[in-house]
Image 1 (tube, rainbow, N blue to C red):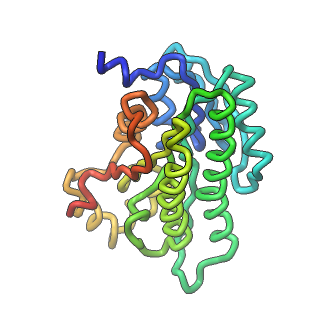
Image 2 (cartoon, rainbow, N blue to C red):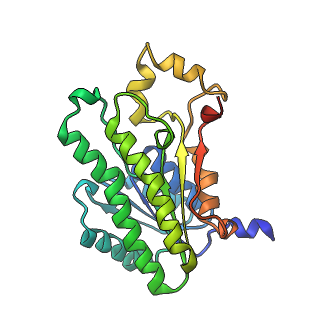
Length: 255
């Protein structure tokens, strides 16, 4: 019986930044657990949609540039999911960008875009999803994408650090306000994952090997490493979990 609480049959999820990488892995994990999944990205999501369909689940692809997302735009995104798949129960705010430069020279354009996509869009979509959850009266699940830099300062990524620290903050704040309505707001904090966003860091001969050597698990993370946690936080098994920022880091923070 307990295993049934982890199933997502009959649920509909929206995953942002789902064309590839971590978002694609998360979308497939939710589909494997039984959810129908809407996938949003600024590039084509055909590959992810095909993989979800192959798992026997329904899907729709949405194209949007979250850098310019407004509150009305977020409402429209949630409405498109509801129209296309009948309802919305789960939101995974995965989309994010990263720009590396010394703080002293960090460009305003990179700062603005990083905060807009990584933090502001996540808030607006959470707000719109929560309104849909309240209107439906069934509660809902929001899983935000935090980071190791929600806990640490990092180097050369001031905007990313600010955004991911903000994600941890709004996860706590929204959980406080919405838990009483049956809306669970939590976050996962991936460690250093083998994706496009960390390619430059992993290839840096002065930093890559030393950072890999600091991970107790002895390897970079993979998208599949996030699936279990997201499925859990999206399921009835996590009904009494609110405001958690869960590290999935191969032991990085314990070192």
